[in-house]
Length: 149
Image (cartoon, rainbow, N blue to C red; front, top):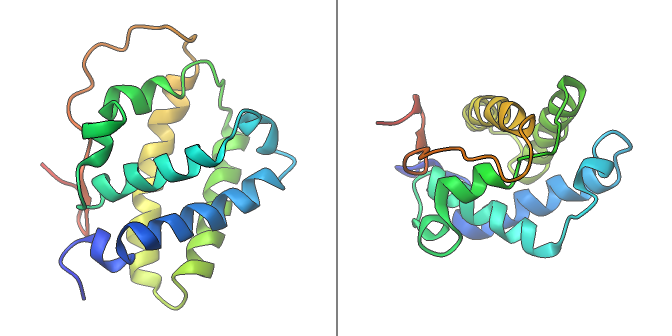
């Protein structure tokens, strides 16, 4: 078993597979597809790079893609509702089961992160685009016991 979640999910390749399996579901879903109307294939890669950093891999999201601030800003104005968040979590759970089958302990840790992260995204999404979020601090890191640091 790898020392980080990043290792356990198969590194960036594993996270790209997870992201692809998830967004295949999202874009076909009547509840979530409208929220992702501006989805691009680049988004899929950015999500994988973000998750890599959160789960203990290279800090490339912070280095190349604007870090925690940019991730939060990308959710401004989306107006995420409870039903959106619930459906997001259902589809992510299904994607995890497809890409990482038979690993319930790993799935549970990943879903703990996604539950935590989507709650923050939902709150931020209620503010309009351009809202000053202040300094959110560094990209969070997540391990087997939850939020690190």
